[in-house]
Structures are given as structure tokens and as C-alpha cells.
Image (cartoon, helix red, strand yellow):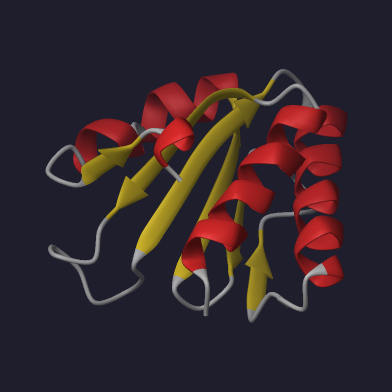
Length: 115
């Protein structure tokens, strides 16, 4: 699995729908649940769902399918599991509340330009 291509595609799909504060975390050294997290947020339910839809569509186009998706209907926090990559799309309030960026602060923050 070419994670650089998958992460870049994910980033671009989120950015296309004006997702905010897109963080890419390499968690491979500190967790067994995945190798990477991508965390972002939208401003409302429709935007959060549109971001999630675009991520699924763009990754499908390169042959990557979600194993599981949670939270789509409420769109407060949509979690999409793609195996080695887990994508978290929040609304603003829930992103602040759950603060995954702080919880996973020991992860290596990846700059999209480095991929």
C-alpha cells in the first residue's frame, strides 16, 4: 500500500471541500490501530458529510475502499477506517471537545509538502 499516494489523495479530497485544520499524523511508532491518522473539520453537518463523501470517492478511484465508517448520519465525528489509515472528520465543536490532536501529540506530524 503506497501510503504517500493515499494520504495525498485524502488530503486533496478534504481540501477540495474546504476542510479545515488538516493534520496528518504518523502513529505507527506509538499505536497498533493504524499507521496514519488524518484529522480535519468542517463547519456544519452538510460540509462534514461532503468531505467524507469526497474522501471515499477519491480513494475509491485509486482502488482503496473503507473497511468501516462510523458517525456519518449525525456528522459530528465521521470516522473512516481504511486499514493503515484512519480518517477523522469532525464538526468544529466536537473536534475541540475530543481534541485528538492533543491526545495523539506524541505522533509525528507530517507536512503534506514532504509527501
